[in-house]
Length: 155
Picture 1 (spheres, rainbow, N blue to C red):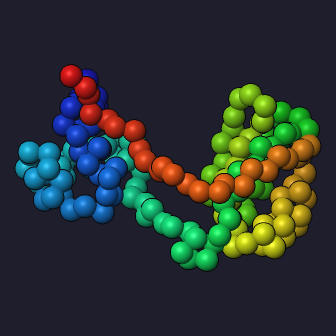
Picture 2 (cartoon, rainbow, N blue to C red):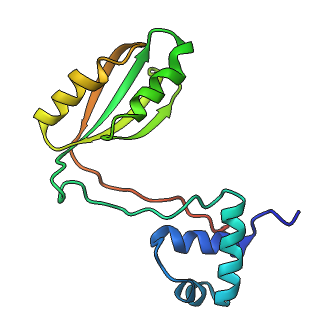
Picture 3 (cartoon, rainbow, N blue to C red):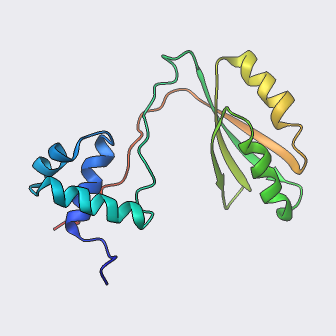
């Protein structure tokens, strides 16, 4: 099947996961292939939906956003899931939403400038969402790792 990813594709993904803005010539040099191959393979992976774009890795605290908070959300009813995530997605400070198993129905990551901003978000935007039964908050003290998995095959 021509749409399968091979070791070359995995090498390209691993290199780009370190720096998504790296130009194709540098990726090619590190992967030991031609820039044209990188361009063709990258286009293929975009068409397959494997690569969804490039993102910046930001240090929010330097930008004045001192709090990262995770919310474990319990729903009143499982059928309200779509409605609740759609409402959460409207809040600009919400950066990740996960439908989860275990103790919580939804797990959410938000950024806030400080505790006053977080309290305002929590009370005025999050607690007012119809369908939420209960929320447990977890304040992140420090992020120690943020990476992608390695896509290169071992061995």
